[in-house]
Length: 419
Image (cartoon, rainbow, N blue to C red):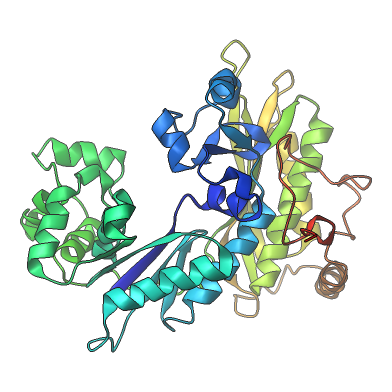
């Protein structure tokens, strides 16, 4: 059996833990630079505030409906997520942290365990220890546990936040209740393709011939179908393994048309990617730099471009990656364009100590001990004290966060004082 534990309205719930005045009231959380709504409480959903709503268009609506609008407080959410995941690890050694607010647990050897009581214990412990409400879906496969979780979430008062699919009758009823577009792994395009074949519910999808699914779709959809039929084909993933691609992309707090500002940002993003590579003991063969103008401003000239750099030797040196990224900006930057977003992606990732050597070209051997020294200093002082000269040395680059709540758990100055 698999259990999917999902935090309810996670960002809003984190804010409510430390600000009880938000309990029972509509709450909305904004994206980077206070752009659009990315999370909200059930109360805000009932009022009619849509996901993805640009706040500058919905500001008056939020005021009229008394919706508390907050900036994303990622340090708080990350810390609360870690606390929840540590608690979940107490209930099963086989855990896959699927996202910041949900995890799969594989329940091996639970044949004689009351699963409803176990799920209740999970919910109550997380709520008591963190203040975060969760729902639990339990089923024979990962895909079915996702379905079970959605059912539990759809009517918490009746389900008490728990749904267990442990019989064929329950599986069929759950799949008939689930629209095909709500199935885990079914995106917009795939939904449209399936609907043209008369597939309206998840149950309809399971009734397709497996040979047809393999022929007209792919092995991924075949595995999903088998999982929904109760035959486990989607296994837990090892989230501790090294990533195959690392990206750092950000929207700017305002648009930039000066190439020096953009080079500084891209250098900082490349530095972040290099640090992540070293943290997982990896190097990369390829770097991609992206620039984007503000697509929302239709009256301004638009430009969307990327540049790929291939290295003869894999590297995780901040010096090498930053230099390559800055040179790439020089080749793709277009004068007169107001850029709103940039990003750096490193891929072609290999183990730091396991790659093909080259007799004729090698990286400067001084880079490795230098990077080790920089990483040690930055870890010691818990901040990016050591930077490259082409980065902004005087100040930390910050997003626009005009509605930011305190960092209750990650900044000693913001810890709540009990009087």
